[in-house]
Image 1 (cartoon, rainbow, N blue to C red):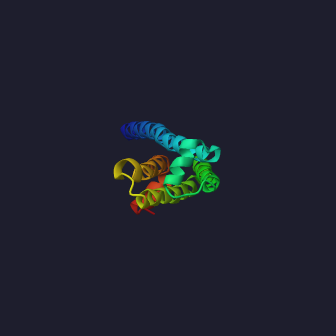
Image 2 (cartoon, rainbow, N blue to C red):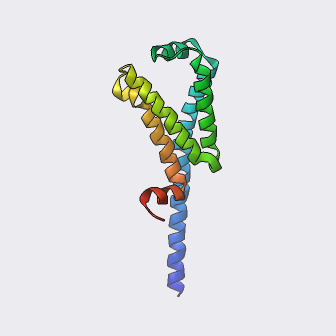
Amino acid sequence: MMIERELNMQANARAADRSGASRWTSRAVGGIAILFMLFDGIGKLVGPAPVVEATRELGFAESHLAIMGILSLLATLLYIVPRTAFLGALLLTAYLGGAVAAQVRVDAPLFSNTLFPVYVAILVWGALWLRDERLRKLLSGGA
């Protein structure tokens, strides 16, 4: 009985260590994605010359910057709030999918430009995967 209790305590300690490491990894990975998306959204709202020029090169009018910036920031804010993080991740994925489509439309380089939004989406979902056991169960087919 004493040995069983000791083994359970050791297993719980190992799980807590993994949980702490996952939590910090999730924060770092999610933080990178959040910082990029905040930079993107604020950049679109402020509208410096390089952002306006890049937007025009993708075939969008300067008047589209505000709505894209608002959508980007709204999805990011939803992702930041733990209770709405899943919805935020879905909306960010949709937004980033549009970014991929825009890059494909102008024949942008594949690995640097076209797939960059995919890399950000991987960070978004990877961070959520690490911190949300319900998502892991959902995606692994568990009930």
